[in-house]
Length: 394
Image: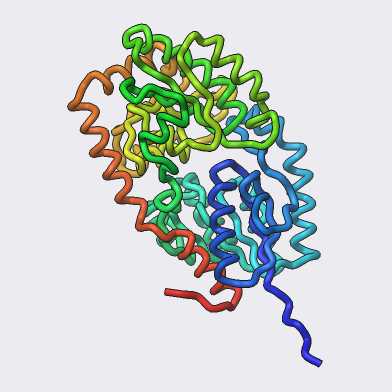
């Protein structure tokens, strides 16, 4: 009697909104290539896939020490259970997507019991601290690097690393034409749009959205023809990032701006916006790919800032586009410098100068050259299948 061969099992762990988006589309590729059993930790996009969702990581994101401390008890509970699960269920591959503080602990556990690991989106902080790089090289079986500079640093540290490029080249594309987007969003196509992108964490919405709305009021006072959009992820429930949608709509209505909340269409918002006021993070790279000029904004609590200055070497830049090309091409306003007045001032300077506007678009095009070529997920899928001993392509 012929026995049925057990399907290979992968445990995928993604802990933030961008990680959830990239993990979910990677799952589509893996499923199209092989009959795999996939267990996952992820958010709403991962949950829509044919996986067994072990934990929902939708609200795991935290910025700063205070925010991280608040999350710690729940995350430690999940971490302990996942370590036990890895040891007992012994998946054939542990595939980690970003979320370094949490995922590196899982990588170390998997290494001690002989389970291969593949790290997609190795954290860029590892690329600055030699000890972190050495630890990653020792505890990760294969590293899928998304930027040219992280590939070089990991390679120098002796890691088994491949440059796969960035999946946003495949993903960050508008779903509608410009004309359709204006119609769907109920906007006047003859009036310029300002996109307010406060980020994908509750703390970012709490801190950055009010500042962006105030900056919008200053811009609107100078140019009453401006229209404003606030993009957030699409969710089935009454909340987004743990905040009531009713509360968000009321907050926007109280601003006095012609502003609308848009769910699930961030790339369309970016594509029709004349400029973006945007939180530091992956979204700045997506905007770079789409080619929309921006001003980067970020603020954490004073305690977090003090702790960061005490215990970390602060980078020259916080915006990924600036980090990638090694210069301040995109204005960054952080901590005390981030005021509504400053934010409006920098945005107006770009909007009112054709030279500055064109220069930033040229710089954004340069950023994209460092992101490799389309097909990142296919290359990562090849790495995963190779570790599983299955057939690869290309």
